[in-house]
Image (tube, rainbow, N blue to C red; front, side, top):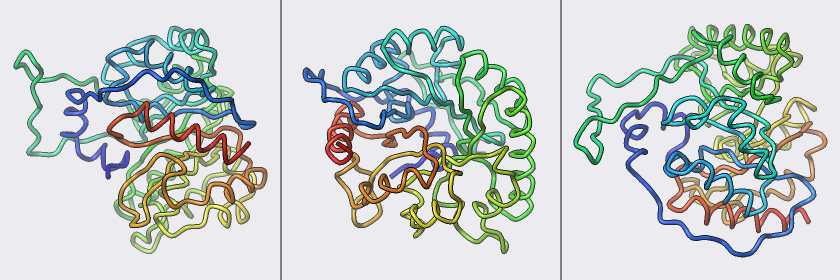
Length: 308
């Protein structure tokens, strides 16, 4: 199982992802939409998205999804496009671009990293991953240019107490700049934010030390559950703070990700508390699935059944 934080750490997986492609099927039937507009986090399609950006968005829309959250692309920019170009492509497919993921601190290549080679035998080149520590205003300006209402920090350094404090300051600074730009800033968790690190629980630190006016949360329901945290209890303790959700499922051993509704997470109970959480948008995500379109189709069918 590979989550985004592990993916960012293992740069070999990042580069190798460009070499992997799934054989996907075309789905003929469109499932009726749920009352809650369902979105897709495009990291789900990391291994196939860049091969055919227009075709990928068309397939997502064909399944029935209405909203998009973008992420890092091997093509650079927004899947090889300028912000307004990508926004237009999403709109042409009848969907809305609601959120974009960025990383909080610089990504470092491991010392023993060896770039994989492409079909031509030459090393693959990957655009640099800009981050909020060094490029916050540039990233905010691009999100604003695309008309995207939310910008989300997808991961930030939390390996020790000092890093957690520095990362909290980066989140504060970014929240201030996003507020000036008319963008809502949010933080996306993995499992590690709920662990005690040098006497600090990073998630508690971010919630308490960054004003709700500057930072909302994008709760990954799966990683929170895997960490032993009840999303509903978190909503009750911090009502209105969780504008965004990541909806993914996991097996009973808490090891392998599954399409939504195929694992053990009680999504019906969680969605029943959406109002308390303050949820505005929710995005289905499945990190590195064997067949992303099949996974997204199963997730959509199960969610519409649950929420219908």
